[in-house]
Length: 329
Image (cartoon, rainbow, N blue to C red):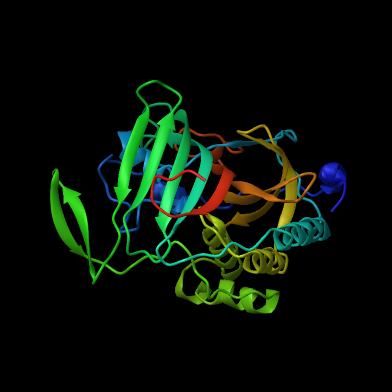
């Protein structure tokens, strides 16, 4: 991949306005700070649960992040040709394959560091949305049986939070309710999967495998699944390359423009529109094509937010394999 700076010039066709209100956005807005994240581990929630009501760490965990900002193209963001997206994804796959493979043991932890911003909203738009930048570190148990850890530090002196992420052993995990330990039935959620496909054909089939079990369009669900795989995760170089090669085959993926993440890195965004009025984006380094993070943008006004505003994104700073929760690489 060379000189991605000209890619934004490929965009000429404008996005049409979304025909229906962003129902999924309405569904993702939490009205109570204590509302649980639908039974999911509060480590790397899917973007659909990241926009939250005000409420300390609960909001910070479910609201994940605003770390990038789309370059303005006027009132609408132009799309570009699919071939441009294919070029970027081919470069990203090549970049992934050049990375050294890291040996991973079941008793270790996946460490992911990112720059985040929490967006908090009130249903009905009764109060303005608030945005709070933070630095996020998470340690995920490789086999899901050991307690992980989440640490977030806001940009204010009081904005520090820490939470143990309970592991699951022998079908139970120790959670805290009202300050007291409680045993809860569970299934281990591994922080690392060694059995994922390492070729584009196999990965594409994997991305579409669960698409028919949702009400979303199949191509949209496949793109979402790809984002779920690489979010706050470590994949082997071959598997990560296969993800990018498979994404290149999903219809509707295109280049939408330049971005700059919270670390000041220049990137280019590949996106796919969702029927709920959201544009989901993957962000890549403009020079190396390395994956930088994710981004979601409204395509119509909702909850006091304007079309074109970012509602979720993440800037990944470091991914490593460590021996214990809390250990820095």
